[in-house]
Image 1 (tube, helix red, strand yellow):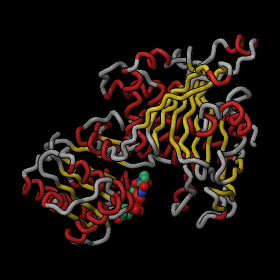
Image 2 (cartoon, rainbow, N blue to C red):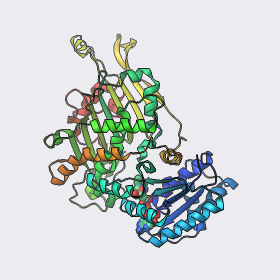
Image 3 (cartoon, rainbow, N blue to C red):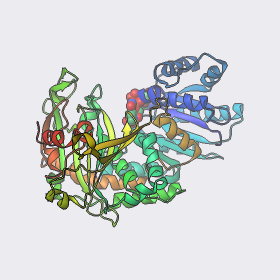
Length: 505
Ligand code: NAD
């Protein structure tokens, strides 16, 4: 890896404190950052370097997976951080920043490689990019790269405008759009699982797969983010980006040793093959929900409309579920069920693959109760894999019994998503970032949902906080299938509990 200067816009903000400083520290402690480290933090408030370094240390103490031990190494890390005041709209601040960057490059003997990380509100992305260009910060003898956070636009048009703005200062291969789900180790593992296991590779297609379920469920409510969330909702906050990225990662098929370009082209193929939603089919394929008061872990919790800062008549969705199809030879006919929401019963991000049972008619004739084979890929909060198979239960006259073969990663000290992503961006490896084509095609796919929501033609289903979401979401799966939750996917618990849960018991 070539050394570089890390220029952090929004260095006094929440994301910098919770994720970016700890990620840099852990990369540093793991010896993954080559050469002298130079970080220039930017914010509106005037701070001395010392105060800024104290804030960085504070963040490490609170948020780093590896607690910072008092040592010369830690001092070396902290001294790499310097601070400059910058107001996004003031061109003279960029000129001062350029002088600062050049001075540090000279002092540390760094090549002119510059990483610009925009950890600020999205309304600033465009102005910052053009000021980087106009001030000369972007004229480097080495490389320049831009890391940006979500949200990338709030609909198709605004995303295109933003991209046009960024493109004036940075080329696509210089832009690294963070989707932190792509930094999660199990998501990064998906491709390896497929290409390194001939069994899975052979089964990864419509001939054998009955349906795929992708869930990202949160137990938290809107918390302190009412202002942002009420304008964004589950569709923009989670679905358009993280959920569709998970879909692409799950459905693409790559040869071993594929390049970042191969990954991008396969992902583009998946998202461009997702069947567009027709206006009159929207309500049968999309379920929007909003949490009402309920109970979580035995404690009453308020409904969305009673949360601080949420307008009493808000029609914003806190839950969204979709049924979609990928029209290509590999996936034709396989429904993908995707859902995400807040204030749900369990916190879990997972992909469940339900395999087909071609002999189900014969089983029915002989009244054999057979559970489907399931592959469960747990992405978080715990990582792991399980495969559900049917075996004979010798205690019950040889009746069939589903059992689960499980692997749990059990390693709490895994690198965090932000570590993986910042490291890749420093290497210039874009495999686990969202390419503009993916972002644009994702917005294109969700645009009819945005329009129907704005027109008020998509119903909003209430669900009790602490439940599994609105009952209407179960109907997406039809008569013979159901959402495979923690309790419904567990062997033995399956048929009866699943049916009861599905029937709303
Ligand atoms: P924040 O409000 O805590 O911090 C914003 C930062 O921007 C501060 O450092 C502030 O000084 C700076 N800033 C604001 N106005 C400025 C101006 N006019 N000129 C210069 N600097 C200015 O926000 P955050 O939570 O850290 O989020 C930063 C970005 O990351 C946003 O795009 C957000 O959507 C995204 N994001 C945040 C999280 C999170 O968990 N916090 C998660 C995902 C994405």
